[in-house]
Length: 169
Image 1 (cartoon, rainbow, N blue to C red):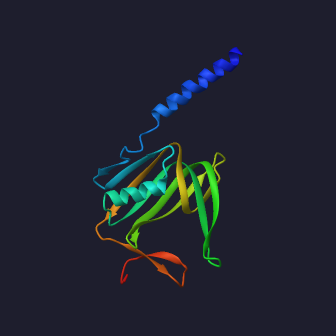
Image 2: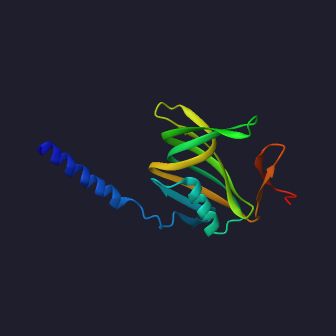
Image 3: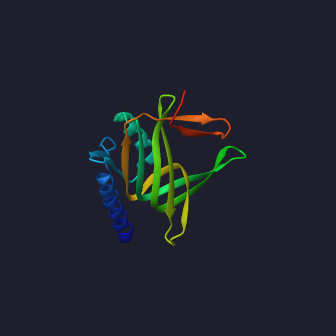
């Protein structure tokens, strides 16, 4: 019985400590730097949602970004026959590299990101990021802002959204 109470107290103490240290969702996750913005996301943060909220809040016309950290990540491989992503989830992996763009489509922020994650055996996996959540630790993202608003446009012949840089009407 003493072991049970000791385990219970230990769990409660460290559980409360972890909850007390959990970052406030209203705390700003980015800072302006000379090159653009530096974003630091924390455990539990949704990467795509945070990038979308940032772009809307700061009225970003367009941007490129890179990132790294610890994640649970769902990648997709675009199947040109079905014109859909074939998804695969990877949990408790290290985001070795993430690259992407922020643009607009029909008045809404459009994030397009690809990445590579590695597991504890140093196997690498990658693809189009469908969703990602920060795991234990953080994700650091450097965002380079462009001065011209860029739009994403659906291209029928491809069956996908494409970043339009000229004659986008």
